Image (cartoon, rainbow, N blue to C red; front, side):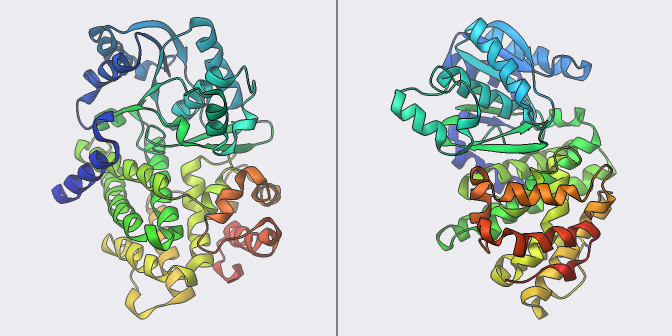
Length: 427
């Protein structure tokens, strides 16, 4: 266990250097220290309406005060999945209070909304709505043409999940359409980040499990789709991250107060965040964006990844052997993976993923999800053809384009509906 932690810590230090403070106790000094490097007037953003956040908020505010940073206003953070309305609300606080730096203490949704609001506050006179920034590199284009940089954000992570504090991604949801969209841009990476893994003990079990499965999806999807020149690096990060998360979640499911397990989980999901800076996520993430009204992001990805794994299997045998051995090590796969290949290997690993979800008491097929309708499959297929989400199709180890979605993605979704892997077509 110590070796896993040391290896993960070394990778994260190499990734972020002095701009990321992580581990037990860092919450008391790092937010103020980092904010003071970026400005003197801060807007503080967090789930300030909840009593569980009071103690955490006080620690962050004391850190800012000690560092000589004035808090000019406090804004309520975003609801789950970062709805449009919360982005515009946070943006309004920024425009009226005119801080130098944003300090956000929250999970991935709150940090994503803050990153998007910072983008609007910086570039809103050029593009006054968030929609033009969805896709890859659109923020950078406007920054370069205007000579601006995005307002700085100190991202204080509260949940072991998305890696939003470390990455170039901001997931924003249109709740009316029931569709999530994505900004992917180096320009929105928070210049400073903090994660005291101990604070995740305050999370409900459901959020802890959701976040861990999001981290697993990051590791899996990036490693599965990594190009040849990135495969070794992706394996190093994904293999270590996956083992840390599986071990951490297994221990936390038995004892939610286990601080050591919280550290394992935090390190693992941070490596998941690093993974999505190496490469991109693909099928399960794309599908999850159309299920936001019935499933949390982590559960949607966990539910869908076994089915995409079977579809990808003939193209990712090496990756499946590496990933499969981790699931086998922790008792979720019984087969001898060395004797399997192609689709059969994919099926064995997929069944291991399903077994892990069952251990966590998560749904393993779509029809088990409360409130879901078969119309959701149509929504998933429509979204997959959206040019703003095209990067997910191209990131797949078996790349698709909009013309192939109905032929190959539809059977994957139909298989996921009732858990029947046989419906999946191999390309």
